[in-house]
Image (cartoon, rainbow over all chains, first blue to last red):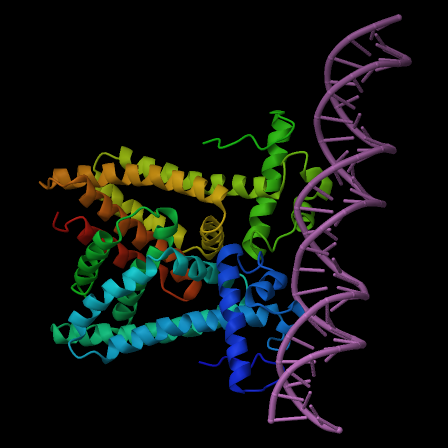
Length: 207
Length: 207
DNA sequence: TAACATAGAATGAGCGTTCGATCTATAATA
DNA sequence: TATTATAGATCGAACGCTCATTCTATGTTA
């Protein structure tokens, strides 16, 4: 998902692409440690092993780096939900994949960046747009998956009912990002099991 | 919960207290709009209707303001869970109060600040400590509440099982903060109903 | 030689914070 | 009561520093 072309000099030589990614990796780490506004271009450039000025050959400004980081982070979520939908025995796939997803959400390194992105989305319109477009896609995929599962179990649900279940499922899932920050000592595997049960129950809610 | 005395001149005249609160209100709004590091003392002072230098008569530095905002925000959560525990018919109280809590969590104004706090907690040790102490208290209260409900329904659970249920309940709840940012168009009352059902199911999970 | 890669200095704005000078209101004194 | 002393409230300028960004000069490569 290419949101915008943020490189002023639109060279797509492999060298330039690698250099861009190098900057993004360094930026992701700095953003995790200090936040979008706490991290400086000087820090990022140092961490990327190049001069501060040189960053501007690959990104128009700092916000373009933020936007690129956000877009890159959301892509993993998009592929996860897309894969989910493609699975054949969807219910088993959903429950099983949940464990994987839960583990990701409970990784503090990952959580720090994802929560930082959400905080930025709450105030930065450009980031909000990227996040909301990706979220809408995920919701569509998840809705289709849930509809298939429920249909297979004999339920005939309204689109709004399905949409509400998607919200509860997403809330359960995304809440883990905050849990691992607020209580880093939680037992990840046991919580994952409980989440699986909760998802199972959710799929059997009355329409 | 008084974490530290952040006022350099420890006057507790009502005037000073009111002035401190005036600063905190202005700061909360600025932090919501620009983040902890995006908001400047100049902005806060302007919004509070006083000079920038004068802020330092009430707070040692910017981080002390952040800490005070965080502590103040968490107090509402602490009172909520404490009230929950005090209710007589705890199950009905929990489910009913959930609707109220869900409404709070789905308020974008509130969510923006709470997510900002979580993001800051992921990198700022001082904020992390405040957040984690408050979270531990909430978890204890919630665990006691759930234990009472489950005991009333004939279950005899291990402390770890109760603790895990608390985590799932908290995740479900806190996830709403992220949902209202990622999908501001969600139907709040319908989602609240679904959440109530999910909580109900959670309380009947096998031990 | 032409085009790109890179460094590093320069710039101006804004940052958090400090500080001395006033203003204000109450308390002490005559 | 009138006057003075005192302590806190408040302002606004000033400081040193860091920020994001730009510019210029120099390598590097094809």
